[in-house]
Length: 114
Length: 114
Image 1 (spheres, each protein chain N blue to C red):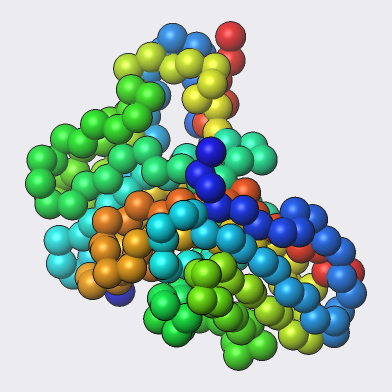
Image 2: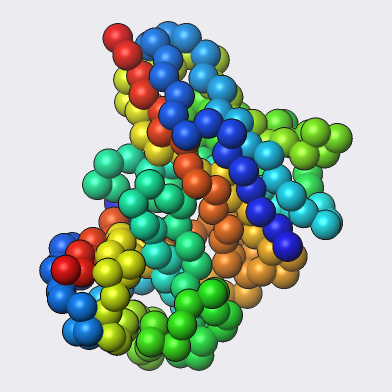
């Protein structure tokens, strides 16, 4: 079975400093992995996706993630946090042939302080 | 603006009652998925509808049921409500037959069961 584990439930950074949100996955095959973001009172939005092409994936709003098979990780990073990045972030995996039936991690709440 | 709309946005029910939640999918999308997001957790897949047929179901009991209409809008019905059914219910639309992981989510219907 496929699953994702988000290693931090809360992350707090200062504006302008780097962001690192950690995610490990478990899968018996090469997975498709995603990061979604959920702002308060907004729908979930896809940030970026990995589907077995380039291991370094660039997403919207300056976020990127690197797929590391040896570490079974897919950590999300951003060089410089902005106040508007404050939100809940979800690491997501799809089952093989799952046709968009997403499996979400528990989420990481990112706080950005001035 | 994702184009996926859900109603109602908030509702309160008591144990044993029944509830119907509604979702209008994004224009051009023929697949609708429903997710349950309990407080402090990631969304969990309930089921998916493709061209009016159920196309996969998560680990939810039969009292969770759904419909998809010819215009691809959808309903989620929950019978015999339990306290643990209190959650944010998310609807997401996508193009059937794709495995991109990109779903377009509505803002959700928050159900409170007393």
